Length: 163
Image 1 (tube, rainbow, N blue to C red):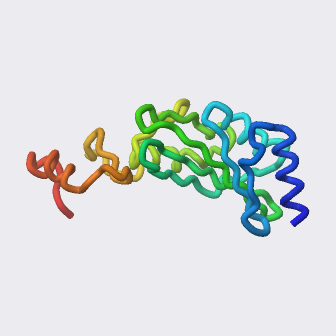
Image 2 (image 1 turned 90 degrees about the vertical axis):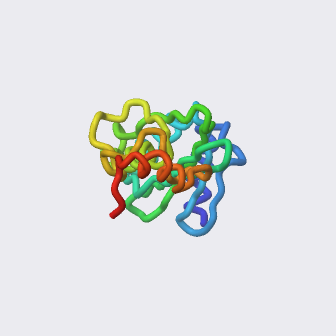
């Protein structure tokens, strides 16, 4: 795993604040965590000089008081870096990565819809994946959300139909 260790050394050398926050889980799988205020410089370096040119997907997680986002990046040799950042649920704001990965627009729209994060710089467009008439403020992948909240808020008013 010398290849993975070289990537870890390069990242830790370029970004000393990542020291101890980068691990190799197995061959070609590296995990790193950057604070929200330093995230953009790390992902920009990964996408540029380190040639992680493909955003495979983005995972959003409700961790209680925080929302976390994992960006799964790959390069042509099959190596993946999973870069995680966390923001407080009380002020869930992240910056768009669509200038680096244009295809990330759908992943970002998804976390807006289902977790209620605000993505600064996200180009305007239709919501995804929830229907257009889904009520504002209802985020179905947050741990504190219950289907009854939707039922009470919308079904009783006849604003949404089952099926």
